[in-house]
Image (cartoon, rainbow, N blue to C red):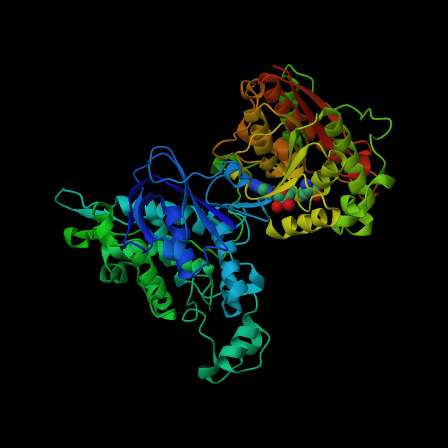
Length: 614
Ligand SMILES: C[S@@+](CC[C@H](N)C(=O)[O-])C[C@H]1O[C@@H](n2cnc3c(N)ncnc32)[C@H](O)[C@@H]1O
């Protein structure tokens, strides 16, 4: 495996003794420090995981780490100005996405994102020390969900890194009151740890801990001996529940900075649950992780950023929110204000659609014009067919029909040497058949779910395809150059992120959107998408109302379907897709709006084909 981390600069590189190990002092951002601490904590063998550093622009949030090659092996640097750097080739696809990243399987499989990388390093450790398997949590699922679907991953991957940056910047002010406010994330963790423990296998756990045999809440309440009762608050010992997981290790590495800057006493007074948790994690391995943090990040080397400031502060405050729990799962929400609740009143929906009718553009999609496919299913090996993806038999034919329309378009657009990305590739239905049909093109399969990506990988290995690279990461982390972007049922806003990626590369696109009702504004994608729609006077809540109605496209052949509502839904899909197409046209694309060939193969049967012409 090759691990790629960012660094700002080498402060010092020296040979400690004539034959002793090299020691590097490097300025690195917080994410790199977390991964390095984890690597050292697990005593990863450098010949199994090579560490590579890629130089990035300096920032104020840097930590000076000390790394010896006896622990980290030969460090490799991709950089600019340092004499000490050793260059290696820059063509590893692990560099085509945000760092930290890891490449495996001769660089055909890439994982990007802090939690994904930390999981891989933990898996590497567990492969040598099976007793550590609990660190990966229940069914090995700790931090497996992507940050946009899991509060846990978001907290460990994004929020805590932001928290570290704030901790580094903490300064005692000079004013008389001398108030210091701790980062919100520390207050959020305090609130989370105050909550009663939740766990998937809670009764199994209670039976084990209390030596009882119960299987329901009622039975637990009936336990007369108080000694046998399970205290859900007291047993919320670690971040995720009763046992230590990777999440605790990552959070400890972050919060150890706070402990250094503020002191344990202050933390214990202000956030007692965080402080209690910190002690438990610390004692759980007899201080090993704490020692590793101090070894890699010695305070004396970070005097400017890590000095303890608690003695200079008169008042410290922390906001512990009334409501916050990492046990909730969905982070997605419509970011509308309270007075902008979506209407579901049909008269109001019709009023909104009348407003859309005044926009001077054509709304609609064309019937698919492919008479025959550009390929024959009979000639496609099993693993490149939907059957190879273990779909239930009832869905195989429908998936075939979905694929046919997209594959025809892509095969027609592709030229030899093209890089084609199947965004949100799931178990690889679209990308794999493309890789089989277009051996002279290189296909990237991008998917953020580990399990789906592993299934796709198994298919590719069985097929012996050599023109596929896997990216297990969030769409946002992907930065590679490519020629054609494709997506089949990328949910909600993911379709628009895909289109933006294509626009940035001036790449052609073939996209069949899905989950219109899940559209919401994010930092870099706001609705409506096109200038024409933005200037139409359509309110955001009206736009999202149309998106919501676009999901009411039920099966027209079923007796139970409200046909009028379903037809309205199809029209609403066309409205949203017209807006998408207009944005592409504004950026120099010719856009075709088609329907899949067998329109009944899925209710989400619209197809956007964009050809970059300028
Ligand atoms: C409905 S499935 C479609 C899978 C596949 N294209 C197919 O047609 O079978 C959508 C997939 O997009 C993935 N996904 C959603 N949001 C993503 C994101 N932001 N980054 C990467 N993958 C994402 C999901 O994990 C899921 O596997």
